[in-house]
Amino acid sequence: MLFNSYVFILFFLPITFFVYFILTKQRLFTAAKAFLAGSSLFFYSWWSVAYLPLILISMIVNFSIGSILTADDSGKKRHGIKSRKAMLIAGLAFNLGLIGYFKYADFFVTNVNAIAGTDIPALHVILPLAISFYTFQQIAYLVDSYDRQTKEYDFLSYVIFVTFFPQLIAGPIIHHKEIMPQFASRWNMVKRYRNIAVGLFIFSVGLFKKVIIADSFAQWATAGFDGAQTLTFFEGWATSLSYTFQIYFDFSGYTDMAIGAALLFNIRLPQNFNSPYKATSIQDFWKRWHMTLSKFLRDYLYIPLGGNRYGLPRTCVNLFATFILGGLWHGASWMFIIWGALHGMALIVHRLWQVTKLRIPTFIAWFLTFNFINVTWVFFRATNMESAQKVLSAMLDIKTISISENMFAAINGKMDEILIATVLAFAITLFAKNNAQIESFLRHNAATLKARCCYVAAGLMLAISLFMIGQIGKSEFLYFNF
Image (tube, rainbow, N blue to C red; front, top):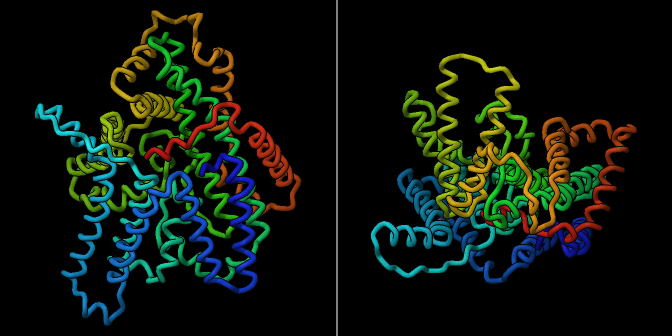
């Protein structure tokens, strides 16, 4: 079920909201939680009920192991340090084995055949929806449980933690200790109209980002990457920038909708974007982009590898390894690995540059950072090296600084439309306040004229988005594929 669909916006979300709070108003709190869990599983099963058994098995196994790891004092005597560590390792092996089989088995077979000249048949494994997100979330839960940073809740609560529908498919990646106290609070089980207002505002902005902005850029990016055989200089840059802004508005739009929808239920999901295209270094970018994934990679991969505790050479190795695996997390493709490797190398260069204590003017630092991000997104988007080379070669081919007659003929695109859209996208990403900043303003200035104008603008964006759903080119969110 897509957030940008009539069935979600007009039926699923309002029905779930009203029934949930009708039950809580009657003080049927367990029934309300069961309804929310059932609704979330229904939401997950909308694409295919075949995905349902896997996520149920995953939750049962992880909850069972987590319950042992969070045992009380008597449990400590029954489960010593060695046995607790063994349970943690078993849990991690289960999760990594699950994602390894479903996401990387065919990739492994293909590469073994290519290297060894064998003819092992592919398994043709279908990638279960959202497996990367709910697996990472449960890995974090197990590690936090081992460190005794979580409290033991009942299985129904755990199901809500994993499957809460706003964040289930593509994040933000949440921690058990962040979300479960909110569901346990009785204060959060009554309607809060300010949360409803702010939640609808954030949801409306996210929907507009996806339906109007991201899907417009998607057409131009697809035409360049997949439709055109060759590209000129301007076409190459139009293609790369189109994808750069498509992925920004697509994923940040999804995150806004997730945060907004969760806020209707008085649940505050963590911020996932902080104006990442304003970054003036690659390190700054990763503090702003997909913040919950960056935090996960830092806490559960980079730091366990040694972080920066063992000198500069080891730090560089740890950075590179973290981003190679971060790239691979996005999908079973060498293009994702190349993308991760490039970001890992950029972070190493940034770390070495910091040692020199030299400073770069802010504008030049931003210019270099943004263009690096734009170029590396080409590898992230391209289906193969030939496609990436086509776009990158065109971006460097100053001999073709012209506009061909059949520019993006597949969609009858016009360069002036792309130029205007790109300028507006730059303006939004560089100068507009992000939703976290606007939310803070609305919470503290709810009665002001400026706040009311924000709500009116959000209402207009919601109306326009509802009218335009499917007319520009309806698509799934990009991170549904990861």
